[in-house]
Image 1 (spheres, rainbow, N blue to C red):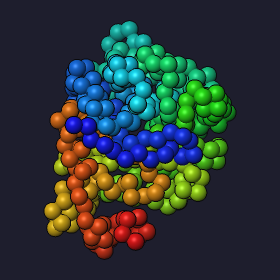
Image 2 (image 1 turned 90 degrees about the vertical axis):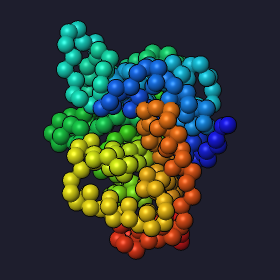
Image 3 (image 1 turned 90 degrees about the horizontal axis):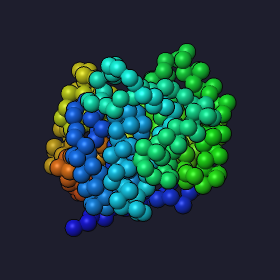
Image 4 (image 1 turned 180 degrees about the vertical axis):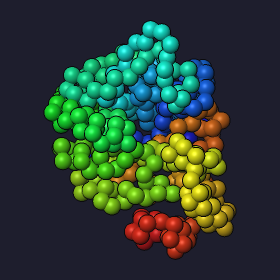
Length: 336
């Protein structure tokens, strides 16, 4: 039986995405091995359930995620909204791979950061070849910012984006090659800088507007409403701490975060609501948010996510969290 998911419009475009999306990092072996067969089966299962927004990137498994996603979508033409990312070009490695531990069994490539006009155009074309598709719908600039590059080096990369990269994105959108452009990052501050460059349709922000953390509430999300820019919330579980794992922002959870999660969990328990269900549904109450983007690694894990998504949550739970000081003042909760 196909489950139905609501859709929301992306910025001022005609594009609509399902409010629950599919993040393609985990199927590429993020921290744990995932077979190609399992990765493809998980993407296919999402489509069968009615989740038709799929996000991927060259970085995920160094091309592996794009290959797996493309294998599935090519067999199901039409009906899916696809995003990928630019800012990293992949170059072949001949010899031992020296990747960080983020991806298990990545493809034999290394990354070259390039946010220039030519770099973005080439990255877009390379992604189409890896996907085996003629177009993607949304193109995000990936991981530009101090969190990835540090302050000094990021100035160089920002100058590339400002000096030609943004123009490339505008040309791709204006020509109809893509339908929407944005940035995909883990820090909201760089998105405020991006507003100074021009207009954007959608941002993918991971981990900064969650049940645990609402640092992006002001001024970022307020500005998104003013500029009519949508937000896809990635990392709704803050890399695992909100589903019972001892990881926060891809590192061991610090004691103060453990304590806050325990307080949130206690409120959820009082209302007989699983903590992950509350975490998954929370971001969508903000009017700027069009989609929540978890990253399941198997069909079974995806079924668990959908069960959380369909859990009925009483409005009083959000009120209780606010009363306990566990939400930033002014956080939308759908109860006003």
